[in-house]
Image (tube, rainbow, N blue to C red; front, top):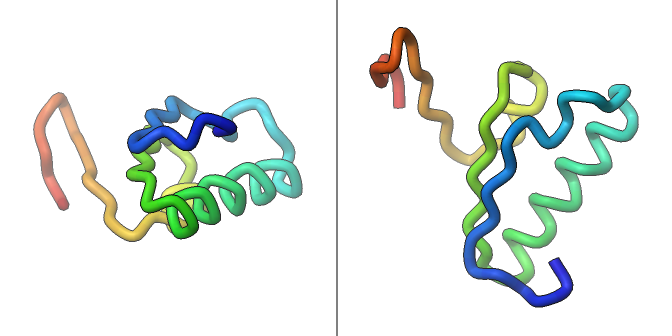
Length: 67
């Protein structure tokens, strides 16, 4: 994050974290996006993590079913 990328891809960034630290990670990703205009793409199975997103695209059996 120090180099201020224009895009961040995060695959299950909160997968191994407790709820407090997961919230901190997501808060940081949201802050980076807002402050630097960074696009953040998060892949997750966690509903709480997905709820932070400005837009969600849901896949089922390899196909977009919502989004």
